[in-house]
Amino acid sequence: MTSGELLISANEVSILRKRFKSGMSNVATFVLIPGGWQGSWVYQQVADMLTARGHKALPITLSGLGDTPAPTANLDAHIGEVVDIVKAQRDELVLVGQSYGGMIVSGAADALRLVADDAPFPGSLRRGRDG
Image 1 (cartoon, helix red, strand yellow):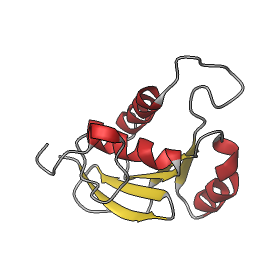
Image 2 (tube, one colour; image 1 turned 135 degrees about the vertical axis):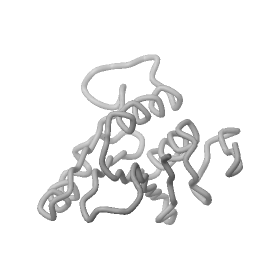
Image 3 (cartoon, one colour; image 1 turned 30 degrees about the vertical axis):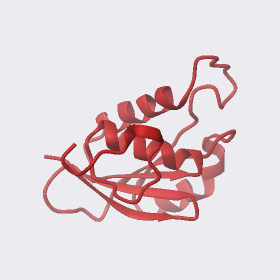
């Protein structure tokens, strides 16, 4: 069973930790989600620091926010992209979202039925702990 816990929700940054197994390891995979009009490059220094400490860092550029236009990209599409990334991971996972990326963290938590109280939930996506 998976569970999630909100670690930080301040200054427009949301961090959600997802546990895949009981117990926690000292190493995690960090999915780094930038704010609107930004891409993976904004997290390069953070990714380098995490990698130097033995973690795996996945800074992402959401569709339509990089070099390739994506006219149909929207919040739901971006949440779907992150959900797909989360489902592909098997280690402890930490989602980090800044500004608009924080809404994506919340939407992904909702889609995956993780608990993330206090994160900025977009629109009607917020559910109680029991769904």
